[in-house]
Amino acid sequence: MLSVKQHNENVTFSQELLAKFGEIVSRYPEGKQKSGLLPILHLVQAEFGWVSADAMDQVAVYLHILPIEVYEVATFYTMFLLEPKGKYVLEICRTGPCCLVGAERIMGHLEQKLGVKEGQVTADGLFSWRGVECLAACGFGPVLQIGPEYTFYENLNEDKVDELIDNLKAKTE
Image (cartoon, rainbow, N blue to C red; front, side, top):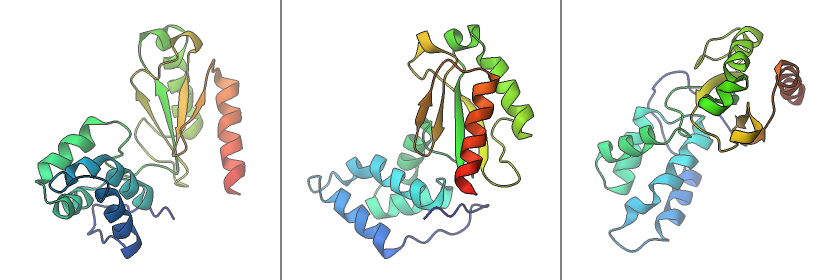
């Protein structure tokens, strides 16, 4: 169950989550527990909605590595959210090919439609949006993906974006 914490509070991993960590670490040879870092960070994010500094510190303790080793990984990969986001995160490709066919227009539309700037969360906690690097669909832009399921949408325009948002709102009612 997703429970987004609003601050960098002390995080306590449940016994079930620790058991999942153990299962992951058991896949790797002794002394190579760091190899489980990526899947463990995914589990932490699935549990808490984001990966806080406290959570990263506790992962480091669990894996017997330095906290900086966790920070380096979590900050490198854009799929890890380092601050609370909405239930649905709309990620719009902002690279050249998508911008040429309207990605910046779509980002402006999202800001207006949702009433929040990039990286912010709507008052109802449902949505946040951000520009991301290439989503590997250059011939079908503008494109976006919606997390946490990472569903993918191509050839967008404002009407299609409105329909996506309305469908997501309807799922939560």
